Length: 79
Image 1 (cartoon, rainbow, N blue to C red):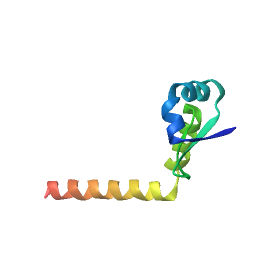
Image 2 (image 1 turned 180 degrees about the vertical axis):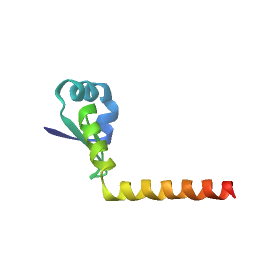
Image 3 (image 1 turned 120 degrees about the horizontal axis):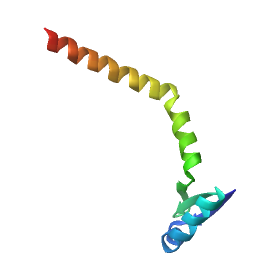
Image 4 (image 1 turned 90 degrees about the vertical axis):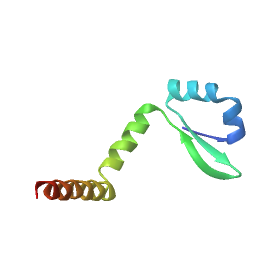
């Protein structure tokens, strides 16, 4: 379940919202000036998001570029 709350409300009652998310697993969508800016989610939801992000094509490409750069640096050091 989602709860919508503005940034002022979340600041004033953060502990209450945090306890609620921890106990129920509900998600809190935070608004600022009428725009969605953040969310408060339980750890299980966060882990699931991280897992999906780790398998995204962009993340795989980034890891590949980093590995190729490390190999290039190692080859230069061997010369």
